[in-house]
Length: 294
Length: 274
Image (tube, rainbow over all chains, first blue to last red; front, side):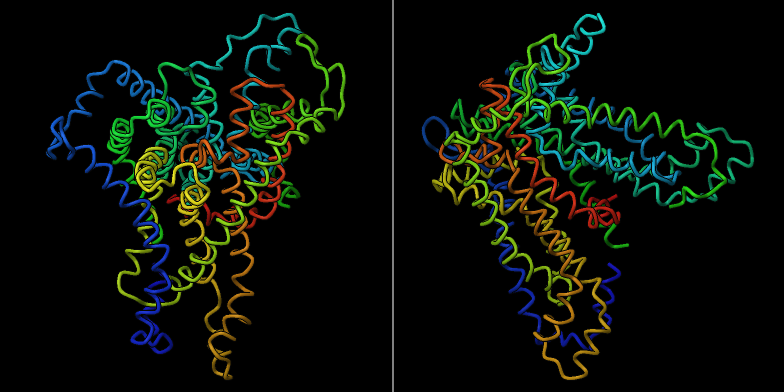
């Protein structure tokens, strides 16, 4: 909040008294829009699923849609596959992006610039094009099969329409942000600290474990939170690349809402995804706010 | 250009490995799609297509549903971006320069939209739109996509306004320029490029927005990405999807060129809380 604080320290030019209502007026439309289309739907979703009419039409506290969700084996399977996919993606993202980010932080030149450009590139590939490319490359008789066949190797067991399909797609999609967040975090690791550790004989792994990791643990958590929030209720990639059953929460909610035409259970599923992600959401907001406040 | 440094003669094997792996994982799939778009015949065991050609471009572009979706997507993106700019830029200016009660709280409240799983939020919004009869309408999709642009269109311009040199504004006022003159001649030229990048990002982001359009827009509103989903699902002619991908990628490429300055600075990652 350096800039904000700076603004407050300049009462001479701000003439706060006269501007007070103007500022609120200028921000009113986006704030109201957000209140109407984000805050209100969330509260409404909670309220509507716990306080609703029973069979006789009397309004009352009613948790039956939640009871149904957690007693329905199909719903449980969908939740499990969602948790598995999210966890697997978070793990793979860390394993892939942490080495890339560390490499980019400590090298200079054209090759690292190329690596960085590639790592950020998926940000500019819409996920719908990614889904199509995935099918053409890893799908049945895709490019990988063609290449394997040409050198006399057997075909792969395609991940298309298996739980690994969404995992591969979502990891691909989330690499840029994860690398950027980790790279920003690595900016706080000083070269001197590394050199000092090296001078006293620390090996690479020790440097990573004792010097780098403690300094970027917050960025790692932010990166994971961001990935989890995006992946847990992702829709397009699981819908196009994943199995029809069990399906992830995104396609599940979509189907309940549109095809089964059952808004109540769809909202219940939405509230359950909110509850599973609430910790990550709070952590995300806290770190962004703290970061902006620096 | 630090490559000139003579102190690093050894080969950067780590870099070569990363570059090779990332090229295989990121560039290769897109090259395959690009090849399909210009292929007329490519049967399975052949490594290289039997026949190249532009036949399927004609066929894809000749489909009325493709044109309808393209026009609809452009229309939607334009309306959403203009509305977003109209409501967000004044708000961004207020957040950056004015003092009013609740400023910090309201500023951070825009994070709320990103702190919840997106599709769950969309379902909650869709349930409200269902009662308002906004499902399947143009304005329903406009609203849902407009909300998606708020954070970007406020936070990036706020940073832009804050980075404007206040002393220049004060100097302009000292020599008698009115507030609008100061804004037009001093503030805007300095903040302009970043704001333009934000506007462009919001246009492109809206163009590719799939989930809101899919959930709120169906069945009446079929944007380009929604059409593409049905092309993939129905396993139509392979080349249709490839041609659409190549076409669809053009706006993204333009965004890539423009957004490099915004994203390069690390300010972008900071915006995500790194």
